[in-house]
Image 1 (cartoon, rainbow, N blue to C red):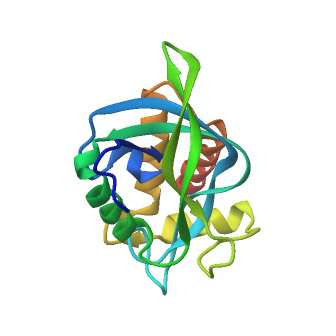
Image 2 (cartoon, one colour; image 1 turned 60 degrees about the vertical axis):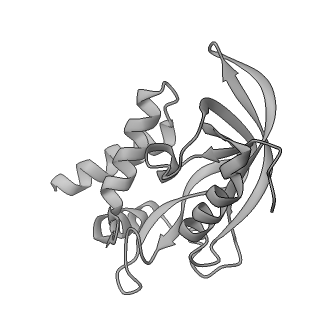
Length: 184
């Protein structure tokens, strides 16, 4: 894709929140409708291995998701998307989509922009469909990969969302269960 004359937006909801890995000229809290943040991706590299997979978030069908939209200048847009593709589409578990998000401006939902984001591919074997809470806890406790542990990944995601005033209650409850289970 060639974006020489147009800035782009990238919607982050997982590790791209706290580790975007690219330069941007602006960022806004944002709301994506039609998808929700879900611990639904087996991690075989960054937060686990094929033998001991971890678990990370993906955008799954339904609901809504609050995250951050990063504005990338036109001059580097193609390069940034290629870089994120190499990171996120290592396997086919994510599909890049250009979706409408609403930016938060002064604490309220404001204008809409189109933003690239990465949605869970429900047909990929790394899509963790319908696993129970005990299995999720087990996967996150065991998951360690080239970028660290699954536990750290969940903690950093929760902490970042809390820090910017967009707490994810479901992820916070899960982290509390995970940490209380870890102490046992």
